[in-house]
Image (cartoon, rainbow over all chains, first blue to last red; front, side, top):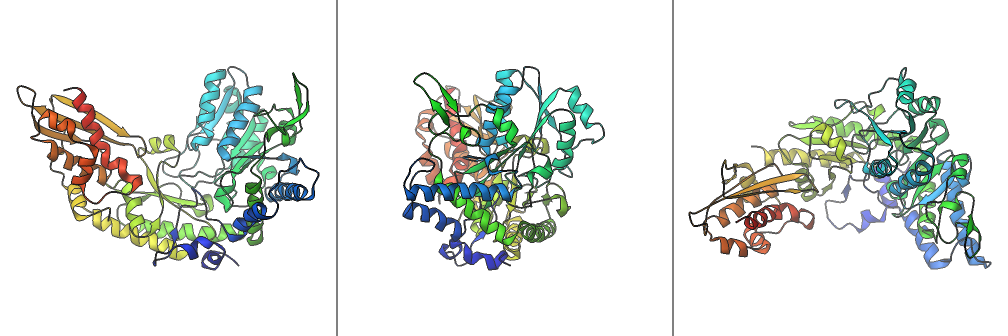
Length: 412
Length: 121
């Protein structure tokens, strides 16, 4: 099984990193490292067949189109989509939510309609709704989370009524919190939302890289994620949408390739997904993304999940043993994925992050693009270790040693 | 080394920390990146030409706190004119070994507060 230390030979950055202490990268929640398979797939395209897709009648372009569409099919299969045409390529999760807000909610929600988000959303699934609510006079509601457990506070029995009373037409929530690591009960929430006549959009950026995901089992209507957080390239992400919804949505951007017929004064638009992919796409990125899907599929997402659970449990155990450390969110690893966030009494998270960096340990310190979540917790920021397939117990041990040393240096 | 002994000591035991109840100039600035906030207070002499006391308050990281403390000591006793000429580079020189690029704003936050204070003088 290629997980942990044995996976590192697949990631050139480990051999290229010259610090004799070795690379200790615990910030995959921000972006993951890239395996040679992904780098080579992108370089293969650039060096051997770097032609445009869906346009030309020569064989190199046919190969580019084949690889590009092959990646789309692989991604569709990976998340349990009904058909490849439900996969829309976008830049990242942020763009996917802008697309949903503009082309779905912007078209189909009316003044006074409600949109339900949660208090733990990444700004990607927050700011687009601020803007749309202002423009269309929508009402925004927020499901709270419990500051001790990091879990959403909601009542399944009364939830349909809750949604109907507030005229909620769209529920948009994260599958896994990027700051707390909470795995939200998306399937149960989606079932209630549908019973109340609402559509469900899910931020899967921190879910797809870490846990097996099947968008139909979740009951989502839209599901968004980014390639670069799951061993793929930056600049490429996916919006999955139910085909019947995508079909009735207007385009997001206008221009080349998204049209069907064009006259000098008007045009008609292609079917999904091409309607939403105006202009030349990030072909190398899509092909690299396809390679990352294959890499993860070969390991198997259940195996990835079991490996990461072991590291998260060890992280919680080691960090909580250090005096003055408080772990945010649930201690139940079955309800947690991807990360362990923590704060240190009396020490600013950025000092923790910089101190760990000097010890050769890379973690994230900041608000993780989830400022309202930190405001609710009454902390300016937090520290976060996040893991992926190449991490192992040695990384967690090094983090714990660095944090323990930091608490001694900073102790008053 | 980011956390030299001097920086840690100043963070633990700053010499010039504490808000002034009354001051001749005061300004608050924040670092949006990390949420750090600092308030800087100046007391001037009778003819408003010389800075006789400088204090800071606020919560933030060790680099911001240490740098603010260094700035307060450096400015105290200067004429207003000299304080206006006290540049960010001057502060960095006094600070010593430079911070990493990502932490530069932490070290310079106090200087932004000083510039804002001096607008009022």
